[in-house]
Length: 161
Image (cartoon, rainbow, N blue to C red):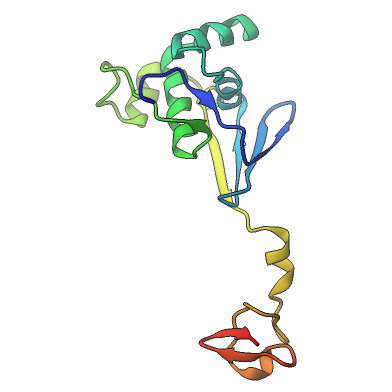
């Protein structure tokens, strides 16, 4: 729902809290995300009750530092991009037409304070182990029948019964 306070997505995620970052593995999308301290702190306070301003206030209280609300919006946009919050966010009108680069320049923060999420595609472990080269099991890519396990055939570039 638009304009609703942001809520961190929890379903279908494996979450590992580390001292300086949060690692999130999205089971459905098979993607791993690494949230730096700023992005992790914003995500922590996305409880579905707090507005961006209230998230900023909670962060200031926890860190005992002044935080620009625009940093919260940067993090929320990234969290939305990686499907780590439920629903959609809507930037305030004052920030609507501003690019991420321009916003960072105007805030004037150090690179460490900028919320950052690094994301990679991470196939499940069984996918890593199942297609290893020769004698491929069912569903693995092949170029000839000799590459498939006994009893399977190379059909359309894939081993199958």
